[in-house]
Image (cartoon, rainbow, N blue to C red; front, side, top):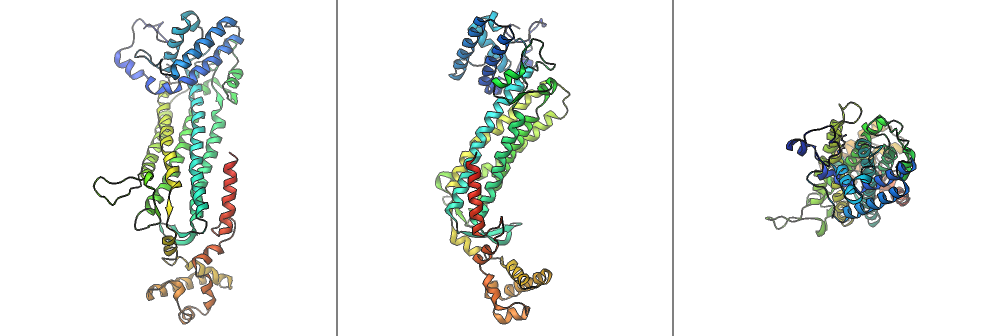
Length: 461
Ligand code: ARG
């Protein structure tokens, strides 16, 4: 069992199937740069505790930075005999500085505190990259909202015609949740920025090493308070997986609308050639594949979250090997978002909206009925009655096959004496939209205010 991290007590090496099952280098190699950075910090802690001399520290750091270069350019990689990234890198270090010095680095740490620390470092860096990608989608939505300040559209509930809204209002309604997701990433980072290093296998270190100094060295806010918790806890990973899944879901809801809007039946939008695909058999097709892959991959991100939670749920404290299953789902969620986010930003940024089509459809389905009811309320009619009268107006218009604004004075009066001809002033899409001018409403002054506030909020990040 030459070269393994735990050979001493064993007379025999692992069976081939045992080794194959155990192996994690094909995915945990992603931790290698963090492993080396943390090993450098660990050598400094060993030096400060008097466990390495000046010369030994120097030689160790030179060996580790050589190893870092070799990992980065691919000249050092995991071997068939390596169980995980930590063992492989120890082998690499020993190849570079010899077994005497290389064998000193493992003092006062275990792979249990190591892997928990490195996974946190990896996730913090990944969440920062994802946040930038999400903000690019937000920027694309904001740019489109700015490009179409006057475009109106049918607002929907239950996917049925509801009330007219500004397109910009609808687009920003997709930007807000994404900005909250970026907030969630920052908030999750506060809990991820706690260092398990120094916890050892589970009980802490006896060698006089200072967990606070290595935590600071590695950019953590503070060291963990409890070494058992520090090596056993993966709620940071589950929380990260949740925020990543939430981003997937938010992108999926946007994508679903784009898929609908780009059908000829809606006809709201045309996708840019660069962000759509054709059909191998139907020459007329232009398919919204970016949006569909987003909708599809969001399911995969939800699966990664639920799979991880299931892995965690029955584990006693502290470390169990089950925890080796923690990394792949989170790595995968990040990898999928890193593919999706630039594509979604590209697709959204190049959508060409058809304002005339949306304006034609905005009053369809009697979407101004609420405006009749609210006009009546402003004339002093109780809302229950107003709702009845507006409903009767819809029925009358439907029977005659006309729009609400086309009902003549006589018909209006026959529905209710309160329905004077002035009601027609509110029976326009524009009038309806501009009347909803309270904070958060779809009136253009409110959407403009919202746009500048959101832009400011995004700029501050
Ligand atoms: N490769 C393991 C993981 O990813 C870390 C090693 C801990 N193994 C152990 N036997 N204590 O969780």
